[in-house]
Length: 228
Image 1 (tube, rainbow, N blue to C red):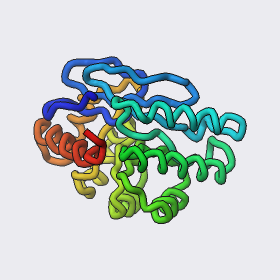
Image 2 (cartoon, rainbow, N blue to C red; image 1 turned 180 degrees about the vertical axis):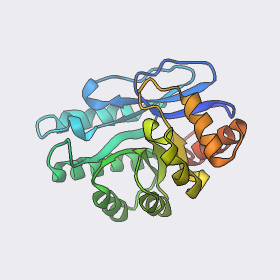
Image 3 (cartoon, rainbow, N blue to C red; image 1 turned 90 degrees about the vertical axis):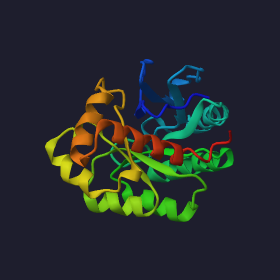
Image 4 (cartoon, rainbow, N blue to C red; image 1 turned 30 degrees about the vertical axis):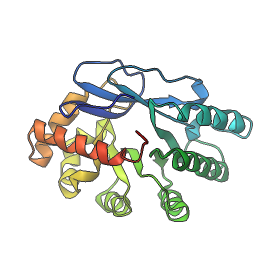
């Protein structure tokens, strides 16, 4: 199982990662792609059913794929899974499939990486209902301070949309949040995670080394439930 070093730049959510010295990437395996994880230095995986690619016909097949890949040591979380009211199937199918994957995560003691678009009530309700055994992380966050703090108050971590976080208007949000619940990502955009770290370190008044150390600490806390 590959894990980051304290001095690494951690890209918590990406697609199509290419191993690079000094960068630790968490690659997303989408169930519909039918990809399997590999043992690669500087790379770990999540596996899950994205709501965009879910329907009644493929549900059983995709869930079986997640059950199979989730047991790999190099798969360190279930995801990205979640809710999307703009692009996705009926919300009841999304909710059922989300709950099924949270159950897999709890059984394997692995955390959950979440995609959520305009379905925050559903997400918060699911968290209350399921009382998950492992922590959750919302990736691609670009919402308001009040929503961010509401999620964090429930122990949910946030990783920020790569384009949003590099804008000037993101600076006040970053300054208002507890740094022990944040992660950074590229989401397969081609953005450089190092540039994102530089912007955020300036927002937070931290050195680059201090921000790396903080996110490394966050990583170890978020993934502490995984069996060694």
